[in-house]
Amino acid sequence: MKKIENFFSGKALLMLRLTIALMFFLHAFIRVLHNTIPDFAAFLQSKGFIFPVAVVWVITVFELAGSLLLAIGCCTRLLSFLFILLLIAGIVLIHASLGWFVGEHGTGGSEYSVVLIVALFVISAGDKRK
Image 1 (tube, helix red, strand yellow):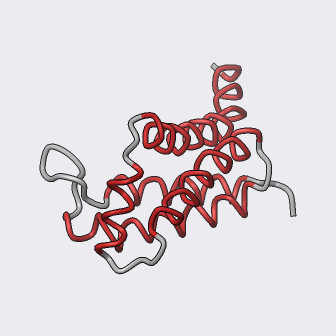
Image 2 (tube, one colour; image 1 turned 180 degrees about the vertical axis):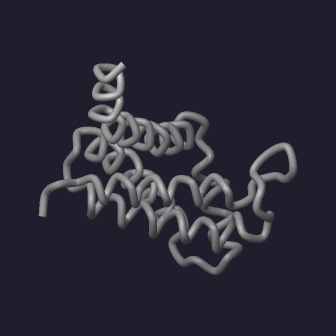
């Protein structure tokens, strides 16, 4: 039992970091694959953003590159902080107005973003580099 416990405790942070990195990567990858960049840009333009297509591309490239760097454990504190800022912006611009719940009891709420923020705090705290 102790061997199993040691295995999971030693791998838990790695598993969390890889999973969160995969979530961000897929989120951006699907945006590119399904060409929803114009839709996202139109939404940002409706919120008053200037150069919305450029903003969407910056977000997308950051999510793709940042998730790969996060997966390999590079700059985890900085990337966690930047991803948290991105998530907070998403909550403010999109999710807060849709309520708390993402599914079943609501549509597109903030709960998923909050879980990602907490996971990123854990990843950042687990980075032993100063």
